[in-house]
Length: 277
Image 1 (cartoon, rainbow, N blue to C red):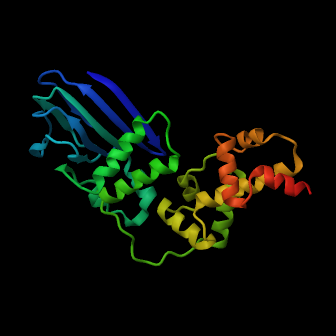
Image 2: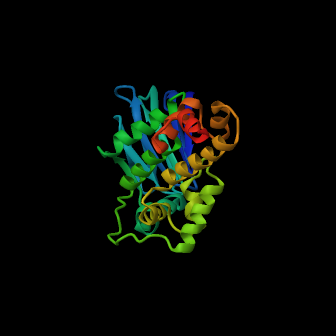
Image 3: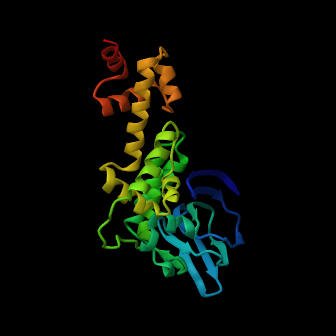
């Protein structure tokens, strides 16, 4: 019986944290159209969670925390417990397209279809724990935090490295498309995938190429664009700082003040006084 399910989504990746009390000899069948990473977080001493599938007997025995199994898309799996009374685990669900969008041609397609059962990775384990913690935190960190954890975990899972080629910048037309889109939408969260789709690049390639062209990653360019528009409002409007902060998409006035000062070097109130002189 599931007594606590928490989840978060970062673009096209969904992370679930399951905590359940297990009936004796509990079992079930599972098949997903998308790949899945299973990470054991906790279970009762002596308990075992077993993955079976037609190609192996058994596919994987999870009898300790931080053991993992990667199940490719469309692979039928049977799960069953042995002396299992309680379990807590992380499931990471994503599409093959989600991986390709992030890493482009650096992804080896063969790895996406290759199952891996009952393995450990000391680099992946703390990332999985951090993702699980983010799922259960009452207040989420900025979306870039979770997205970064997910990207790092996927890179390790599929052994994705740089392609070794020097990253060139965007063409003049590509840069104009991306920067104009950022300017027009700077008051709302912009997903890296939206920018990559504009110029038909992977998210990783877009991020590197944008920084090569501008000297800034896309999210910092967006923040500077947001602050420039805020300065225009501060100069011509009499709205309060809290009203400006809310209209510009900041969580509160304190957040607005921190970001504004980091970019401009003055607080919004100080800048407004100087602009009025």
